[in-house]
Image (cartoon, rainbow, N blue to C red):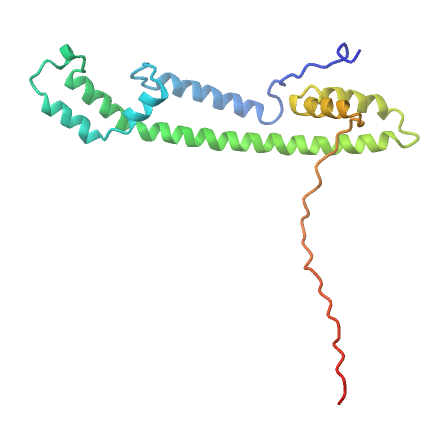
Amino acid sequence: MEKQNAIEPTTPAPTGQHAEAAQALMARIDAIRAELPILTTVKLNKQALASGKAVPADFMEETNVALQGQDVPAWGGAEPAQLRNLVSYSVAYGPVATAMERAAKEMRRSVDTARAQAGSEALTTYSIAQRLSDIPGNEHLVPVVEKMRRMLRTAPRFKKRASKKKADGTPVTTTAPAPIPTTTTAPTTTTTPVETKKP
């Protein structure tokens, strides 16, 4: 019965005050991606990638000099000009890749934090609605709370939690996280007077 009423999770389309700016930024990112000079698309396994990246650039150049005049490609190696081009490319565009990765990490952290804050506030509102629906006169909130409960249980994290509680025979409820206190109170100490005996 519950499967029939299950609500599939959806990703809402960008709307609101940030939608236009986000779409404009996406267009600029696509333009930058189109300009990226992808020199090689050879796929290396993790071990080969790690070993190759660890080789010093001056060692690479030394191998070119050592076999200068030899037919290196005949032995399975690369042309000296090709090797120098790969070294030059990696040195020049390495900082570009680092800057883009840093920007992506900062953006991802900001987006995830905003989503987490919104989710926490939504859970708080849901918890309040649950309590209000139990008060006489708020019967209209009962179907609203039930709908929110079904929607919440479509998320894997909450679906797993609800299934575990159901297996244990405990009622399925969702509570909001406790608010973080904004003020702290210094601990109070009490002293016990010490009796002194008169001589």
